[in-house]
Image: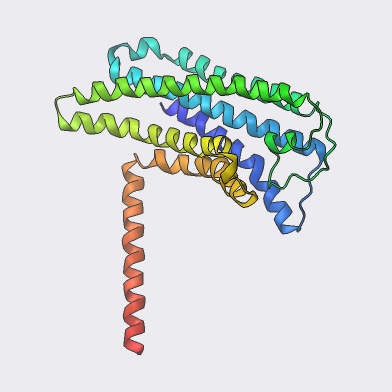
Length: 265
């Protein structure tokens, strides 16, 4: 599990580094410009990150399924070599998907200006600038990837149905709590990733607006990578104790502040 978490952390770091530095630089310099090659690189890196993350989350659901439903076979089914191969497959899937989409998107002629109306380069925004019917080829690729995403989603759902059935059969309450604490962080990350991405790409056109598209893009591109480390770290008892002490100290300072204010009045 920690090997997969290491890979997930690296992917999240790459995902945020693809968008945030350029956005911060544009904000500081009061600029909205990005070069053509920079836009292509940003799309490639972003697609690579989210595809590899999605593949890795699917693999992690299988890891949790084997750990809870077939614990005696865990060492056989998920040895060190198998884990390395699966992680490599996730990275390779992200690389090939990003390469295919980036090459296909930037082979289209763009004749409707060069303004995206977005804070980072994204395939749907690039397609809006195309005046060629070749964009249907990219839509076909997106549909194919959509079916793959749906297949992975079904796999995750089936895995967790089996996991919850196995957990509910555990006789001791402590055992059920331990099993749930192992699965819930991953389930929370998957739910956050899915809900934000699906709303971004599947929302009806009637509720679409530039401001809403911008907010949704910020949520699905920046929030999951930023929240993932916190969600998984909540299993660490030392981190929980540190957060509890921090909250208690903050509340104490707030109470002191209000006490001083009332005394002055």
